[in-house]
Image 1 (spheres, protein in one colour):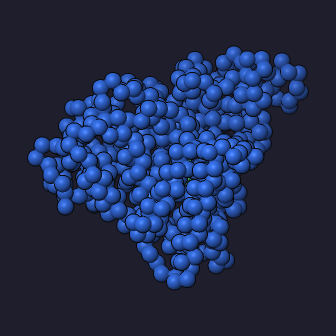
Image 2 (tube, rainbow, N blue to C red):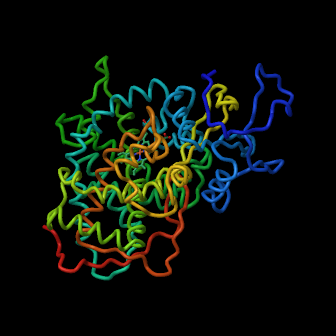
Length: 474
Ligand code: HEM
């Protein structure tokens, strides 16, 4: 059993051991929680608005609460110390939750779904590919594709900005992974688009039998996965024939060796590549989409962003060296991921009984942590619903408890693509804001859709206006 953890004194519970009659060596308390339906318990994820449900329960029950989803026991942790204990200090007591593990049939043994020794070896082999210096070489890809996207925009036209951001981040991650020519990027993007259109993420989680259903959507989906596999294996085979460093992530993954000199097999490379393709583009696209929405609703902040990018860049494309000189852009992105964290929920399954202060989460129970809920907690973020990038002063950051803000998770399984994502977000926002102003179409409904990532339920219809005096940047 994991060591006793000190928890805030506000934690209160009912004596479930007394009720169930189970004889534990110490009294087992269960935190309070919402009233369950006698058969199914509580099913927050199946409700119309899971974000509102979790937020309401958190306000009602505080730092920790319990609910049962059918037969699954769930402990929701809503305090930075409790979250740090699970993700960092006691991480060995947990596996990824069943939702992530179910997507294994597609991701195989990729980093997102892998566990144990095999995960550790792959993480060590992949880490150098995400080293800051290596990532810096992708800056030009990011600004180059952002510029290309802007060239296709027309004055005052209405676009679904979510779709624009999805295409942009997909092209960026494909190019960073493979450094292939436009034709192959097109093939990979088309296959991934078909998959995404036919999946909404959920199909990845279907039980094995359902994947072979002869429905048009499943047929298209399977065909797209096959096409993607063929393309990726084709690129890997070509690389194996002439072992040159193409300057991309795949080259780094292929060159990496473990301490015994072992390298990744083709299957392992395929699994990691598929993981990076999917984990690395929808998350970033969502963060960008929400950022444009927030800026559109805060014209005075947007005006200051325009002033910053004009002053620092003076009409040229941003580079890695400019990032430090764009503090407001960085604060805007930070605040956007506070309000709309793309990975809005993180789950773990306990391998053994796990004590949380006076409570005990039994083996196989699920521990849930939500950046969305905690990052809107007034204890850590005064006036939490307000989009206020100015709150991110150095003093505020220093005083913030670790894990009050955790859009990239934490501990050994922290997002490997974090530096890549930060760089991409700042560079893309700076590139676009230099030339265009985006405005939400009046009356367009805006609502978050908490699926695997935090999407926009109705897309994001915006009109794009070229900023006065700003012409396309060479
Ligand atoms: C704004 C963008 C992103 C956000 C918010 C984000 C968020 C996260 C979070 C919260 C986790 C941890 C999940 C958990 O502990 O259960 C994670 C893991 C991961 N992310 Fe990201 N991510 C982003 C971008 C990226 C990019 C650009 C890549 C790759 C190119 C990437 C690849 C991965 C991988 C491979 C893992 C699994 C790491 C492991 O378990 O070893 N992510 N991400």
